[in-house]
Structures are given as structure tokens and as C-alpha cells.
Length: 173
Figure (cartoon, rainbow, N blue to C red):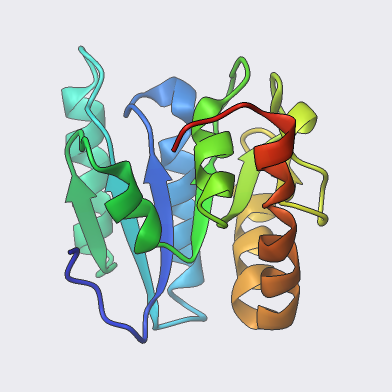
């Protein structure tokens, strides 16, 4: 079990760590959200891609310097454990194919915020079963997360609609 307070709103990311995945956009949005919400925490799970160790170290330092609550989990076999700790899943990629991780998160009844790149729009119907945002937009990501924090009934409605993903994609979670 992850050591996260029940009172925290947990924003999560499970993917490889590199520039293409847009994790810097997520961290900037998270740090901006801290100015409005003191009950948020960021969970990042995944391996650092080869050659991105310094990139990741700079991002971790930025979070630490700005006082964000943050948990890092290197690659994890039990992704269900991580998903179960989250309130929202974010994939702020700059490019993607058909992001399986989005399908997995939705299969765990999580609201997903994803950049509208690659096959994301084949999975997510905006504000129906998830949220789509523009690539490289800290502003859009901030607004999407803030919407889900401040509108719990909307978040629940979208979460309830994620079950349709199991019918659309043959998936073992």
C-alpha cells in the first residue's frame, strides 16, 4: 500500500520518464495548482528512459524546492496498486500511438486527462469518459485538474462513464 493520506487529491502518472511524455508539463501544472489547493499530491511511477536521468533529477529538484507532496515509484509490476491510490490519471504526452496506459487507467475507473495526440481521441470522448487537452499546455492541464478537484460530481460522472472502455477494448487488467 502506498503511504498517501486519505485527505489528499492524488494526481498520477504511470509511464516512462522522458521529454516526449510531457512530464515537465504535468509538474509545472501541479506546482501551479499548489498555490490554490494544499491537499494535492503527485504520484509518478515508471522508469527513467536511458539518457534522461539528468532531466528527471532536475524535475525532482524543482518539485522539492517548491514544496510539493510527491511520491516516486520506479517501475512497478503491480500497477493496480498505483492506480488504486489515484484520483485522476494524467498523460501529457507530446506524441503517442494508441496509449494503452490510458485504457488501463480507465479500466480502473479513473478519470483520465490526456493530450489530444495520436490515438487518444479514439479512447477518450472529452468530458464524457475523460478530458482531452492541447499538447504542451500547462494552462489547459491546470484547468482540467482544477475542474476535477473543484467539481467532484462531474468527476464522478466521468468516472462512471469509463466502464465503457472495457467494452470497446479487449483488455486484461
